[in-house]
Image 1 (cartoon, rainbow, N blue to C red):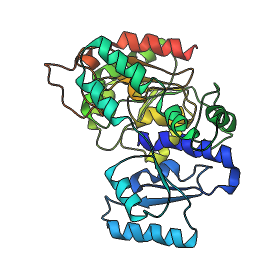
Image 2 (image 1 turned 135 degrees about the vertical axis):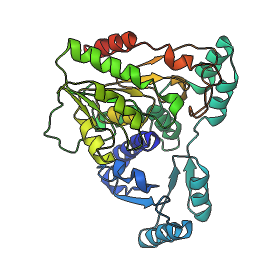
Image 3 (image 1 turned 30 degrees about the vertical axis):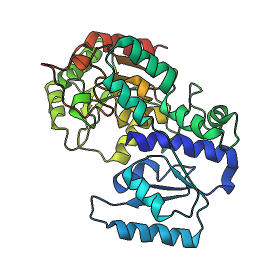
Length: 340
């Protein structure tokens, strides 16, 4: 989900470069279609319903029909997966550009445990720019666009002059005073303990008259821990909203606190400041917040990062990378960024 949101920055850049004469078709999995179907820079969305049993051959026929109706001039592979490679091979005659996701460099960092060498690889080989800027920087020379980032920022200004890539569903609606807590993540190891999210909510509620909205998916039953908070200012919407509804809630929030996950990427894509908590993954992978009023917390633990996606189960007696992040530290960072 986060990857899809981050790639929309490329859409904005290309539209800023070529204008409305450029016709963009965005291809993604069906479950992520709602992330991009209302994007003003995307003219058409084609989805592959893999979980619904759609056959790969039928999906290819769908793309062929599209190509026959409106010939495709260029394929931009922004995901770099086996599935996208298969798609490119089926349409081998169409020119193609593929993103470099720094997989090898990220793998090296997970295997190097010396602090100096890890820092050297991160700073000299990968670079510390966020994924939004990295994609555009990688492609700009090929498109002969030497002010690509500036052009993208000028096209869609966020409230703090950052790159925003999604448009609010209701442009007349102002940001509300509520904040969003997003305690879920694609892998359990990437989740800050839910009990600490609950403690954080209690701390915010006891010190501020701010409404808190909890967003999580249908399977995130651990969010029932929030039910202990008896306050009209807390709304636990875990499993009660669709992805589209969650996006609308995030787009009008004043702040979002969550793990290294898609919810925080959606938040920033709307220009809503966020605080991201990194555990087994690392900000240098390119997924740290980029907004001037956003930030992150990441502990310098010798075994971190342990995998490129955070999918590995911690081999230690407890996940120090997450447990070392205290409620007080997150609360103070939230206040610092909120008052920025």
